[in-house]
Image (cartoon, rainbow, N blue to C red; front, top):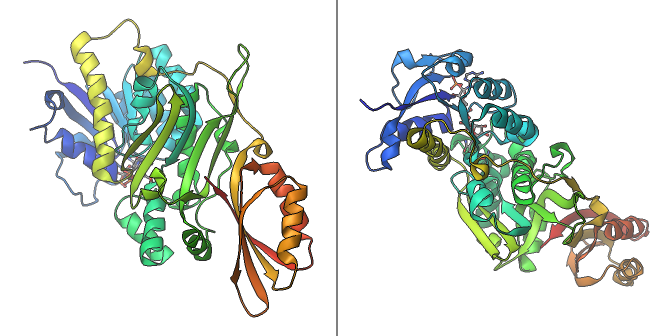
Length: 438
Ligand code: NDP
Ligand code: HSE
């Protein structure tokens, strides 16, 4: 009988269950699917009732048994979190096993260590499910777009927050209630703060940035703002002014020509951002994600689809498994790794200082409803070279007015300097919101 490729599954939660379901029902799928076989499965609590029945002999509560099992050739890590996930991945690599993981937290922080270990052991670590759920974006960046100079990657990369923002904007749904719903649908991280505070999106944009620009950035230094402090008022005003608000993750190069071997400056950030209605990302709703890649010579290309959930994520995990299984079955062990599939860093990159970033801004000020206030605000912005695209007054109460300013593109440093001066005006009660705009 021809040999099958043994899979060791670490985790049988939302994603692990989806993966097991695909592997156990190969009919109608690519023929390679029937050549992979679940050999061992690790979970935390073997007494838990599961959505699918798995023979007891495959199950263990000791994840190390899976990575050490000689019948396991590919380890699939869908436990999540940093440890023991990192150590299990490294152990699998050291034992000569290729790894597939959906764990963006571990890859964003320990990706370099893991990639180096994989190269020296001659194995693959594939991560398609780590960004964008079911959307193919990792392999396209590594392979299909390899001939481009990438300028910018702009993404809605967190399904939970996009689901929450959409339900709030379209139905006025309650934040806490929709978050619970996203958890019950299997979209949220085990600690959903990672979603709503933007940390998950920051992990993902760090990974995409590395692939797009060729070198890692310090994950801990990525400026990150989530949606937990976003106010309905700003979403309403943005809508009235012709914008949608989305949690965007952006990575862009700030230098077109580089001297040999000099480090590439990048602007990378995660924050709620206003997008003009009609922008392709403004129409991305619910759990869907989308990643807009701008490159030379391709221009713009957008990847769109379900960004979280069992089925879509398992689809990406299984694609990686099949990629590795195909190599193993076709060529046996190769003497060297496919350089595009294994993807290592080839350039140094660094984060630019926030004040060097050029962007449009939305600012909401609460001011005394008195003559001349808008004039004074305009004068201060002008003195800092901040050009105003629009300024609108909304009524906040009998004595107060809310003034919403949209600026043209300006260096962030000039904007923050002008806001510090505006805050000193006696008529200004509060700078109530400051969001970026595309
Ligand atoms: P779950 O919490 O649903 O599942 C985690 C699984 O890991 C559970 O089966 C749990 O066991 C098991 N587990 C946890 N710790 C251990 C341990 N120390 N030893 C053995 N088993 C352990 O998470 P998800 O499936 O949602 O997510 C898994 C990974 O996929 C995460 O990295 C996540 O970020 C990523 N991901 C998730 C997506 C999603 O939509 N959910 C989308 C894209 C990526 P038990 O069942 O007994 O508790
Ligand atoms: N919690 C993540 C999200 C899962 O909501 O996007 C997919 O990575």
